[in-house]
Image (cartoon, rainbow, N blue to C red; front, side, top):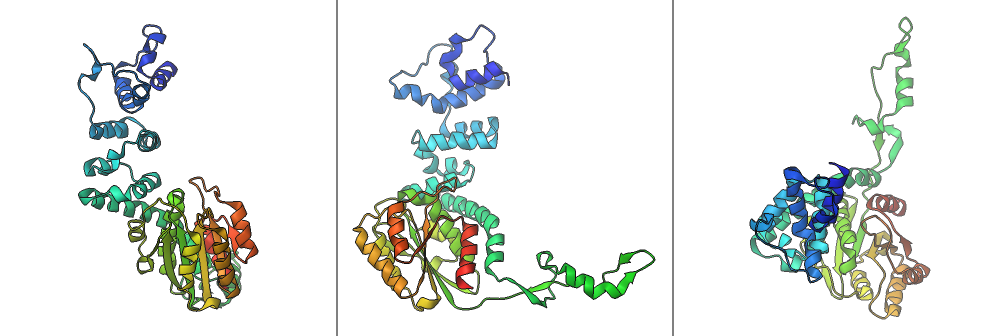
Amino acid sequence: MKTLQRWRLVLGKYADRRFAPGAGGLGAAYSRMDRALDYLYGREYQGRGLRKDIGPGSLDASQLTLTTWLGEVRELFPNDTAEVIEKHALDRYGMTELVTDPRTLERLQPSQDLLRTLLGLRGHLRGEVLHVARRIVRQVVEELKRKLESEVRQALAGRLNRFRHSPLALSQNFDAHGTVRRNLKHYDRDRRQLVVEQALFFERNSRRLPWDIILCVDQSGSMADSVIHSAVMAGILAALPAFRVKIVVFDTSIVDLSGHADDPVEILMSVQLGGGTDIAQAVRYCTQLVENPHRTVLVLVTDFCEGAPPGELVRAVKALAEARVKLLGLAALDGQANPVYDKAMAERLAACGMEIAALTPQRLAHWLVKVVS
């Protein structure tokens, strides 16, 4: 694409008069791009009181529909550009019909941004669109799980046992030095090569001590990404025999989703983002779930922006710490994994015995290994 054509697409149709004749003309190939962009970004002009310009000879005679517009965007632009355009349609221009019409929703590219939007509009999803949304949620969750599960399970399933060998030939467990020692007698002097007749692999220790992991997750409006990752982590942890996982989501009310801890999709389809925040109430509820304090880890996932009197939260956390429950306050992370939280409140809880951190799911797994060792 020529530089002038690129600028013309950026500036919009009202920039035509600024280009020399023939210099900024888009031609047929880029006119479709211009039309698709104007369908969305032309709303800026309408928002400023400008009348939509339709007249004799206008290319606007055959108007785009939302569904055909989505098809044009996906066909004409690279995937990453199309996702940005769709995100603008949802976030900047409030085109929520993108997620309330099943045919339209099916044409959207599944992504964490779309999942976040679906969670925010969860209360508006009905009938067929709800079934389509569930399929999209499952697709995004499975993709996230594939990215996280291998590393998380490797960190949590047990450290390498350097004193016993395993019959399972796993490449990451290969004992190079032991294999060389075991096969030295097969050294071929003529070819100056070591003939490996038996390869050795380290065995893994299996931790099956009864640790309870309680995930207490803030579902207020700013916590979408943290809720998504918490649900996926709950599913991964629940599949490991060494842990019993319970998950509670809260805003000013509390929903115990422990019965779905192994199903991230069901968890996410049950949350309703928004509302206020009563962290103290949620922590007190989780206290009732503690059966063996010495074998319990409570992970509080929140931005620490307490809506209730902060003294109540401090007292609830202090009581759990005195009972010797392992406590982790996991600060909310934004889409770029940057921590976003009330540092003053977090410092007060740290003084009571709660470890405060801003961790990705992978680093959370390594923290759990350290705690339950």
